View 1 (cartoon, rainbow, N blue to C red):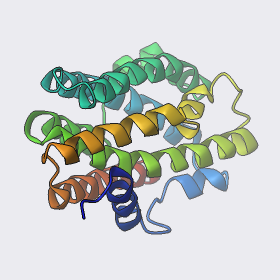
View 2: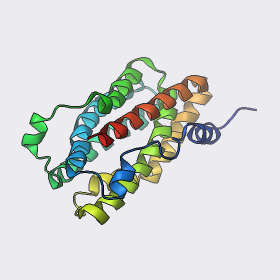
View 3: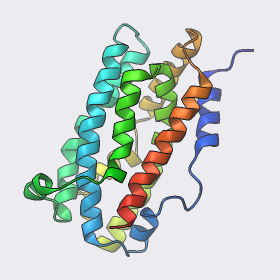
View 4: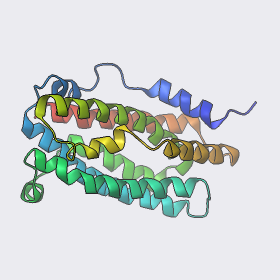
Length: 219
């Protein structure tokens, strides 16, 4: 009996969830121990990540432009990155990351491995498999953003406007999850999903995301 998108995605999220304690940065912020410079670094690194991911999602949208289920998923992701980028400035400025700091900032390799791999996926991977991998990663990323938002408010006096970037990911639109499942189902129905590869892509995205956080923990 063929498996549904809900079953495939739920299994991937369950099997590829990061281990407890794997993220070394968010707990530091939760305890108020991370320096403000490191939080500014988070925002400045995110500027580079978001601009790269937006291009990657645009590329995936172009590759699937003729697919009425998968194409709109990537198009919506690209649009979402534009919204996130607009909100990011207030968070950066709250911790000293103004425009001058952004121009002078040199990204860290450990933080930029994630978007580099996302760009590889945009060029080489089957888009339906990428949907699964991204869905797995977004589950972890959203949880980290929720924890970070709470900690920044409690320990760093982060104003509501500055936290809107984190709000965007911590409180995702339920319709986005439905759109992702629809895209995965379309891939399954067309025989274009290879779960082994989707899990590989998801595992590597999770590893590169943890590299991002743990690089920040060393600041």
